[in-house]
Length: 157
Image (tube, rainbow, N blue to C red; front, side, top):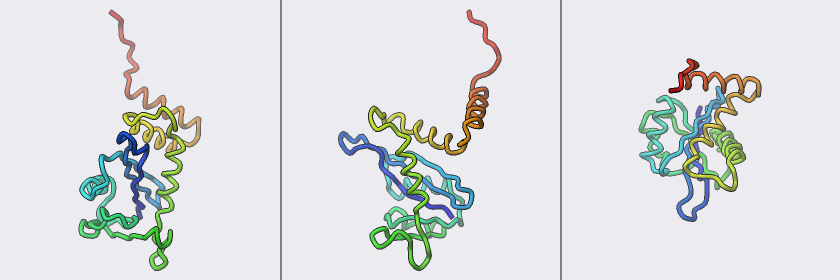
């Protein structure tokens, strides 16, 4: 089961906001966060097809962009936030992905934030979430740096 939701980061003024689409898999507790240009059904469906396997149960709110999920090979459960936060009949809820948004917002600078750095803010959040232990995090960081930059000593000319 994967909970999906969209969130807006930033302010409306000067079109300085970024839409982010995310998903949370209940079993593994893995999540994905993808900046998207808009929240139209075509954009969200492309992201869903990229990150979620067909046949998976997708739980969402009642945003119209999700209406096509059943026709695309997903089991779709939706719930209406204006009525309640947990669907009384199916038990569907999006509380986990909503909590992820709160955690992501907590890690993004309030002032001096740049829209061009949004992907970096999201990557930092996902990295810290994956490696919550500091010693494991620093080891993983240096392992990645070692893979990106060749350890061979280069001669200056």
